[in-house]
Length: 81
Image (cartoon, rainbow, N blue to C red; front, side, top):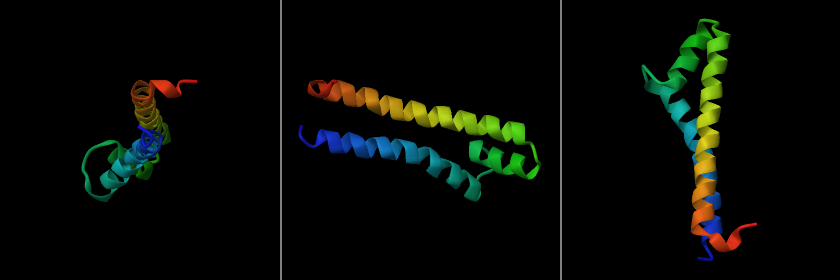
């Protein structure tokens, strides 16, 4: 139980970086996905669509970090503030 705070800290960082990693993977060699849309629409100067995709990715990232926070709260009831 004493290692749980460090575990969830790493999980929080990993959840945020997972979205970034997925976008870069889609840039590198994909023909669909949100990263591909950013790359394609950026080259076509469709900035409104690019910002919409970035907003969706931001919501996904914040949601993942929020889910980790909920799991942390459930796993460690003694640390509630």
